[in-house]
Length: 411
Image (cartoon, rainbow, N blue to C red; front, side, top):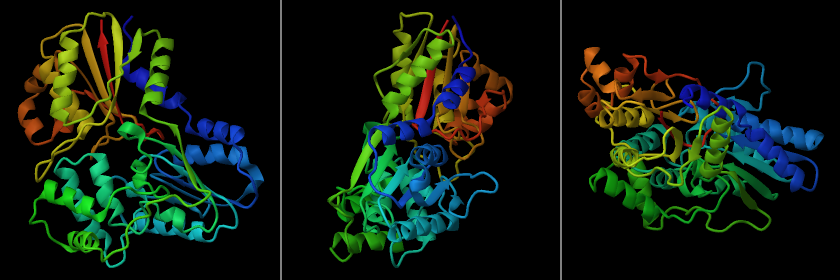
């Protein structure tokens, strides 16, 4: 039975409740003591905070919540910040989180979800946010994956890489919703409460490999001084009493997605292979799987995160729409096939869309609309091309963040 893939996605993100995961964990694994401080950071921060509040009640003495948007009339400890580019709001949010950790009178519960790296950003001493953001933008545009990007971030920061936990004199428990392949807790939101195994030398090597040995500026100089032992390294071991726990990662989210799709009537299967590598490689791998498919009708659900190399002046779109347009080229002329590529957070790159729905007619439809789709790929302008034929999917922020989803429907 064919289903509406956008409706399936809408059901998945509306039914998925990060707060319930937090509440269940705290019910099964209570935190001893009173005067708790709750710090929530990331795209799922509000839902996670609400789950903690339901479980802890009046034991919460202080809280700071940092999210992309917050409800009107939120308490003074709630901060709306910016993503994917950090701003003065990100600095203010990071300072508030650090201050709350320092001032805690009891155990600290930290709730982390993806997006936190940009939402809370405080440059290391001697750096300003512009210098830090400029280097990170160059590293990202050069195709760095999230682990590489966050290794650099941690070594340009006074907040990330375990430094938030160090600010508290009380035990810190961290609950994490992962948006990264492998669910490395020190990578999610750049691990503000998790020990960091990487070094300044690692960060500098990434910059040199991605941006060239000639990379310069205050941020690069900071890394060079750190690699020479002239800057304090990130914490390498967890403090006694601290703990970090994975609540859910991409694979568990895929299993939930499969369940929801099946309940809507699809013959859905969460695929075991997580999508990684460059967006071009991922498109080729998916196309190869589709060509050899023998299970019809069915909906395959993939999860993961591709990387993309951006031109100097990219157009509108993001990695989800770019992947969708690449796949539209590869399935051009095919019948009985639809593909939805979408960011689980509802935001793809610099566009207002979450992703796009394509089929065998998409490539030719774009041409008929007067746009060269191959040129749009070269310019990283997939959003404009897909938007011209109404193929974009716009949901707004979902409050969920477990990387990207790809739905392949055979009918």
